[in-house]
Each structure stands twice: as C-alpha cells, then as structure tokens.
Amino acid sequence: MKAHLACFRHLTGKTVSRETAIRVRGMEIDPDARTVRVDGKTADLTSKEFDILLFLARNPNKVFSKDQLFDCIWDLEAFGGVSTVTVHAGKIREKSERIPKTRSIYRPCGALAT
Image (cartoon, one colour):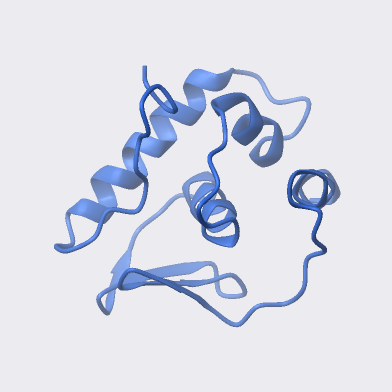
C-alpha cells in the first residue's frame, strides 16, 4: 500500500486524504467500503479492478500509460506485465456497460490498445 501511495504522490504531486465517495457520471465509488454503484446498482469488481477504477477517478482528465498504471496498481514484485492492465480495463468496461448509461474507461487513440 505504501508503494501505491508513493506512486500516487509522485504522479500527481498530491497527498492522499480520506474520502467518503467519488461520483463520476452516475457512478459512485466508495473507497472506504471498496464498493462501486452505477445508477444505484452495485458493480461486482475484483480488488484490482476496483483499484484501477479508484485510481482513475482520483485523477480525472489525465491519461496514463499501461506502464504507469501497472507500476501504481501492482506491487513491484508482481508477475505479469502491462497486458494485465489491458485485461483488467476491458473487464471494468464490460462490467460497467452491463449497467446502462455509463462507460467508466475510455480508450484514447493507442492508450490502452491491445
């Protein structure tokens, strides 16, 4: 967790404070309860999917490379690579799109392309 906080501070220049909930486009992300609700319906995310979504919600209007996301979300000793980010981002999109009127992750040209 300390590595995640350090990465967050490094990329954003901000310190982390306790949040009650983050609301983005009909989506409510509760960092303390680690839950996501889209238009009032609970989205069933894995731990890493939640971590990615929370990181992106805390950094609106910023674009991150797969390398940056991997370094910030996974521990330094994690096996795998940036393709893991692609898979998780796709699953977040799939799960959030099951609930109408939302799209949680957008893919700028080449940003999360496979």
